[in-house]
Image (cartoon, rainbow, N blue to C red; front, side, top):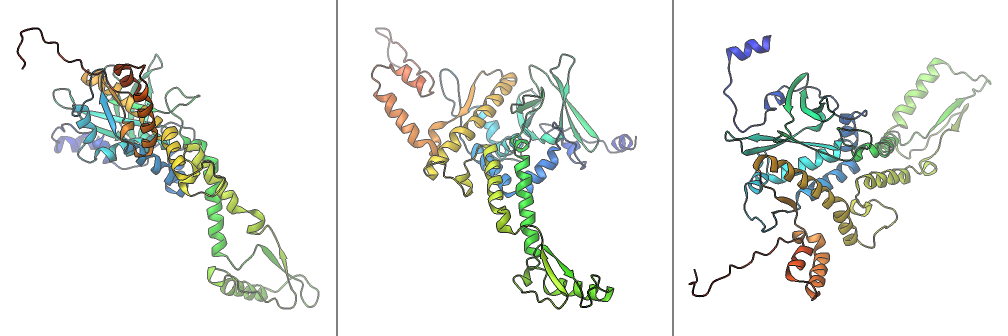
Length: 400
């Protein structure tokens, strides 16, 4: 009621070509989990914001995927300029094309879901693209089981997007989930246990540094008179002396002198016995494995799976980056087709990837040397559109 009265007193001018969630974003609050029994906000906090391996893996994939050039073509030509290309190059006033794609890939990697909103112009043509936070989006199932809409929820406030099969305002891109009909499964969930192990090892290492001169053990007081209980004054003096002279990183390695009646009883395992560093490296390799990043690219010690860094980098692009880019580009092309009506193909341009230059050169050489193939077949093998046929001139017709 108060919000309605405020709106009546100060009416806002209608916004054009802007995200419909702008008025909801301004009201900050705690977002609810979007799609998983696990809290995606907590997973993002512990696996991305609080873990260096998870942060680097997701940033590495998202930045590499956003830097892959995209090519727009149909069966006859490749487009150097097109409204789709202009829209992807400058999706909205707040983001460049690279920032937009990096945010899109990042949300898909973090939550298994990515949502893009279309802001149309007055004539109904696509004008702006906005990446919506996946932890704030909720799929609204219809009576037939298919999505009937999407709710964008922030702190109890909600905006609903209607799911139009022809021109949907929201493009939902999701990864494969075998047990969910509406949401995707993130690799962050599969790596959650390894992330917990890695974070626990880091916290244990930090605690060890803070208490470097206090090994795990107990001081046993026997007393000179044979009694096993010290007085309160003796206990206070001993505790203060340990805290001031033997705890903390600045007292690391300082020997402890025990007076009569005190005996040291070690408890637990030493760092070398626990081999916590090997456990931490194993957890880091599992995190990288879940996202499809060769550990060699992250500097994680262990078995050298690839012969050299270049081979690992090619495998990273072939097995991780390019499938992700192809999936997202294909989904965006299908979605944009419903708005513009142009049945075009949007895919990564492999000829402009330096990491695959050696492979592409070998492929071009093999195709060029295949004399049994026609020019049209060679172009098809290389992923190029069909070459336009030259116009046939009739006899006596002057040249243009």
